[in-house]
Length: 184
Image 1 (cartoon, rainbow, N blue to C red):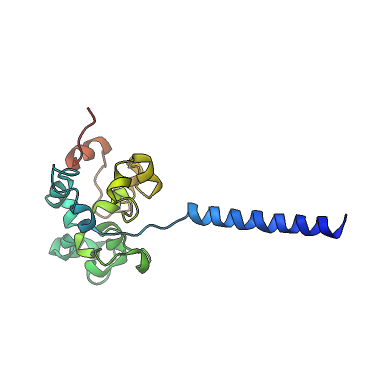
Image 2: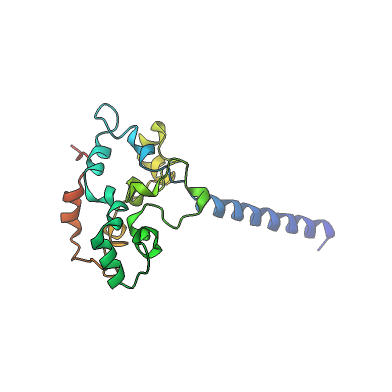
């Protein structure tokens, strides 16, 4: 084999490796969490995207962080072996605060732990799918990080590891938190 053929082969291998690395990096893109205020702008009025924000703020998920300050939460945490303030305990915050444990650079300035279990806990980090032109195209929104919600989305927290676990009935739970419009 000639030196030229070897060089061409090496260059092709390097090029293929670079392309595979770039493709892999794109597939694993990490999206940024914007917090509920990022969603509120379009999802608090029927004039734009619907009133999902208003429904959320009136139900228990929005109070996920707040409830950890209650005496009951402190008792539950103590019985579960959690030491200290439940509002500072990773064991509690992983399910009571959206994006708890995410890298700091993935949390936009608008993200707040005080928002509790917000939109992005279920729908995924929203920075890349929140622009209107992306949201109007379901496939583009999914490609930009919008999560497809399944029972497993919910049971990541609503499971037997929770010290307050009650049997989780997915279909019934969806009706309790319903904040979307049914397709006609």
